Image 1: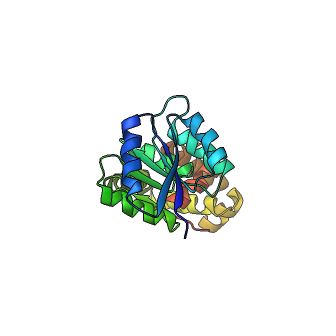
Image 2: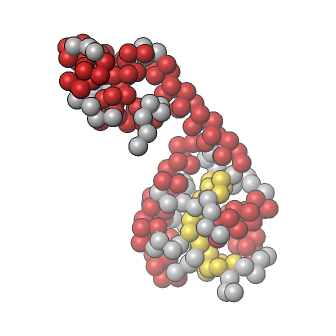
Image 3: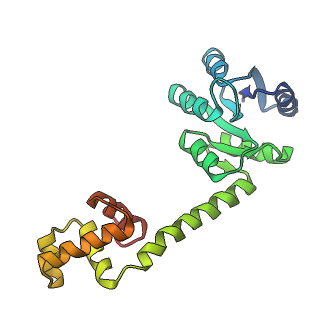
Length: 215
């Protein structure tokens, strides 16, 4: 099997040289080009048609996340492995959202790079353990933040929210709960104020997130 063609994108020459040296120790990869910024990367990708790009985030001209988005849109077969010093959940989320297959911290050991490369070439997603831990922590925290307002709702408010999310009209909700239409309207207004949500579609999305309904 032919080695995977790799393109390196980092604005530090020494970093690129180190990555090249690491990759050259394996017969499975061959470095076909290097770029010092995102725009140069896109031009080289079109010329060289690599199978894999090792991408830094902080690059001049066009950052790595935007370059990733443009790259995978134009060349969906190219896999992108992000190499970055940033381990915040926001960077990771943006990178994955824009098409990156892996997110690896630059202080990772060479063995971890091998693991990440292997996972990416198998079609899997890889995150550095430190990054993965942070992503999970932030995700759990967001769930807790969402659950707190839901926990403060009264049983009647939860009933109204569920029925609204299920698509029932105010009259239908009033009939089901044996309430007046005016009372249902009052509950819905209070829900919107308490949850800081100002449209029915937002109530539906919230009910889905907290598990009151499922479609």
